[in-house]
Image (cartoon, rainbow, N blue to C red; front, top):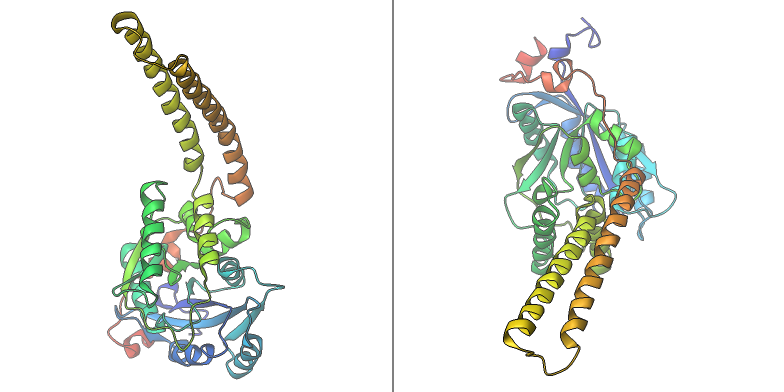
Length: 347
């Protein structure tokens, strides 16, 4: 029986790895060497067969000689392909470009700096199949290998997204993630230029889960992110999170308006029953007018912002729906385990 005629249930899970490359001149070679063993059919820790069928290196026009290294790796390894961007677009657009170019049943995104261990991919896949999840994020079991200030800022940003803006799964966001291939490619097809990848995944993903992974030290280079780029990164998350931030403008207007009415009532009652307590004439009425006026202006801006929010959702490409294949006949249906490769090959 040929591999094409083998029953769907007995096929290994095919994985595409996407690596956005900005400063990978000295780290890509080592990363690919660690991926090589997984390009042969291997069993995950849970005993499921998987194989990495392609590695897509997305050149994001960084400052080093990554282009040369990508060309050398595509010559050396038949499973490696380069994806060339016209200019520097940033990590998330580069990742989406790689996702759009992939063909695997599953897509894994890895950083170029070596802190993500490719041997953990099997654990991500097991979690997806055990929990029937379409997206699985690596959940670090140790502190990220960055400075304490950046780690605190990252946790604070995710807290704001989760609590203030009610963005689901935002505390779990990591660039080390596994997603169902058809979900990732559909996202890459319609996501707008300002959409944040993980927020956009939340628009269409079914169940989202996490899998414990230990992060490694970055291999011989400092992070390419600076304060300005990190702030831009966070702001894109906020803008992609929906219209709740816009609605806060309306709520602020309502609060100020109610405060103005209550203040006006208190001033009037004080004047009628207690006597004038305000030595500066006109101060109370001016305060009331300011509160009511600002409240009305902010409420009006909030209403306008709601209409802007509709346009923002459209511009970001947020879909009304996403059609996928029958989960019962796709990769999520192949949850069987094998004690070893020989039993898989004989199945």
